[in-house]
Image 1 (cartoon, rainbow, N blue to C red):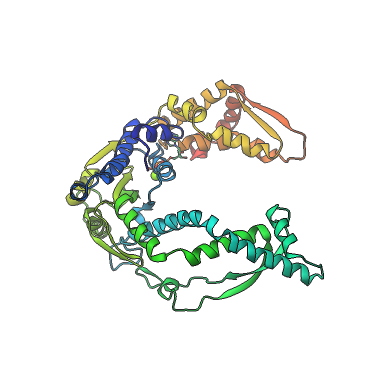
Image 2: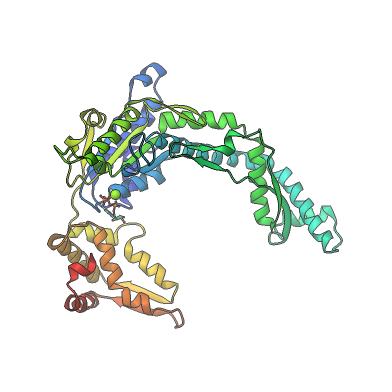
Amino acid sequence: MNLTPKQIVEELDKYIIGQSKAKKAVSIALRNRYRRSRLPKEVREEITPKNIIMKGPTGVGKTEIARRLAKLVRAPFIKIEATKYTEVGYVGRDVESMVRDLVETAVRMVKDEKKHEMEAKVKPVVDTKLVDAICDARRAQNIPVDRTLVAEELGSGKVEEEVVEVSVLDNPTPMLSVGGPEINLGSMFDGMMPQRRKRRKMTVARAREVLTADECERIIDKDNVYAEAIRRTEEEGIIFIDEIDKIIGKAGGSNNHDVSREGVQRDILPIVEGSTVATKYGNVKTDFILFIASGAFHVSNINDMIPELQGRFPIRVELDNLSKEDFKKILTETKNSLPFQYASILKVDNINLIFTDDALDEIADMAATENETSENIGARRLQTIMELLLEDISFNASGEHPMLDVTIDKAYVQNAFKETKKKFDLKKYIL
Ligand SMILES: Nc1ncnc2c1ncn2[C@@H]1O[C@H](COP(=O)(O)OP(=O)(O)OP(=O)(O)O)[C@@H](O)[C@H]1O
Ligand SMILES: [Mg+2]
């Protein structure tokens, strides 16, 4: 992960409009991980990450920032919902499972990278197996075979679609879950149980993938992979805790519900503070994992969190409400914007959807007005408006007609909603 803070923000800007404070905070936190990693060990041990809390109304981009970040960083990253966890002893997931999930992600990452490196190495073995399989398949159909020729055909890519039978690993991993942590039986018995194999028919192209994965799995040093995965989890891991406000009781509240929520906060605390969690790959120290928490904080406040937990999230950023201008930009300047998505989808059914600029203005205006007059649901309002606006076209497009240009202009937008406004109260309909 070597992107500079500016590059990270630039990347986020492609998908998320505004919210520069939040973008800046996460980009700095990410870069600090890298900066720290370049320091001598003694200094490094002293520097713990500055965890972040993002606070802001619903639908303004909190989760979206996390999602984009996840794609951007090549670090183990998971996003979890705080509400999924329960206090130890209750039904639900225990909080330590978030660390186990993170390691799992890291293991997958490292394995993928190793496979990439190994592909060239295992190619000759895989090719030989493929040639064998093709020869067998042809012999079975009484076609005379010549290995050298088959090898040539394979090399030239002419036989990719031919169906062959290969022996593949067949090990559905039994999972045992008894309310508490999940125990992966498959890996507990790794190496103890003989691996079952099964013969399967598939195309040469698919067989190459399967055999390559198989061979890599065989020669990759698993202990190395696990050690590296744990190192990355500890040094580079990021856990994004969404909906953190939902595990905070109302100020002064003391009913049972609030008590159990406080219990979850107390359980999370040691993980954020730094503790050791046992996973099936080994122990993981959580001291240097970066936590980014986010919530709307409608009814509760950051200050209602138990003080110890508050103290572990020193950086707080507020996300802004979105304005009409922001909505317009979301419609026009983001990568894979809603109009673009709808146009792409309808093209499949021979509709060439074109939005005029004043139509997009009108939609943005409508979204802003609706958010003001009824409930404020942020940018999600755009989705409800677009869906309603294009309902007729989406319903009638069938693909059985030649390509049709359909232009959505201001008048179309106004018309579409004049109707609905008359029939139902727009607010009720949209929500
Ligand atoms: N600033 C923004 N720029 C572009 N798109 C946005 C922005 N804010 C929200 N969206 C879009 O609106 C939708 C909802 O956003 P998101 O899931 O990030 O909301 P949230 O802030 O996490 O809300 P909640 O508090 O309800 O979880 C997403 O599809 C997202 O792409
Ligand atoms: Mg969210």
